[in-house]
Length: 129
Image (cartoon, rainbow, N blue to C red; front, side, top):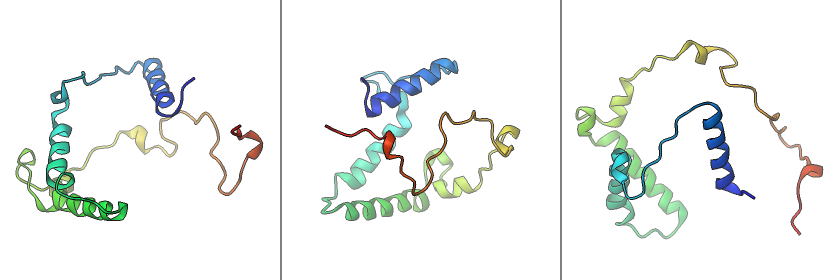
């Protein structure tokens, strides 16, 4: 039986197979296959996480928010032509496909209807025991 993230992973892999989407994994022990995120993770770890002893979740969130603002708005990045990510993002205007502009989009209909706000469906809930 599958639970949580394993169930989600199997569903995504099933969809990828049915949609003929090729799936690429980062090989174990090969973090440089995704060097950009490894660089970011190292910078976050070195500049914030290893340097700070957090006493609460709210303190950690506030420190991370300050670091994120600094990273995105105050520091130029060499890979962005020495612009800040915010400045670079303001010059980027992606062209959207026509199918994305259609009112209902191009995605297939959901398998189940959305739950109504404030409405419980207790007869379908499983109980532990």
